Length: 117
Image 1 (tube, rainbow, N blue to C red):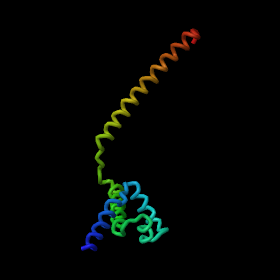
Image 2 (image 1 turned 90 degrees about the vertical axis):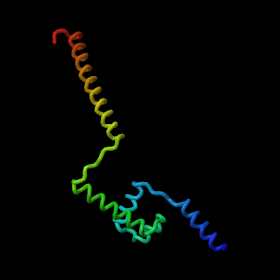
Image 3 (image 1 turned 90 degrees about the horizontal axis):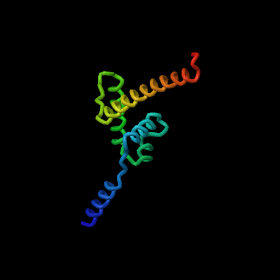
Image 4 (image 1 turned 180 degrees about the vertical axis):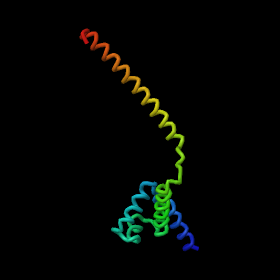
């Protein structure tokens, strides 16, 4: 009875204190593994991950690379990316308008200062 509760407690502590890796960290770990400076076992110990997790990340990384290189996949833009692109377009148009106005004012000023030109 005591052993079961201890095992459950240990599992719960491990689950709650487990490291959660974001996509960039996963890529860095997989890239480190691809450089083959450390064995897969050493790499897994270093980052406290299981071999199965490491190999799963590696497979996902390679599969994603294949899809991107094949060119058959069209990536869907997120709504945030679309908003950013629209905002960039508006900013570019505003900047172009300001540059044109600046040139007009500059030419008018030069003609006012030096009427012979």
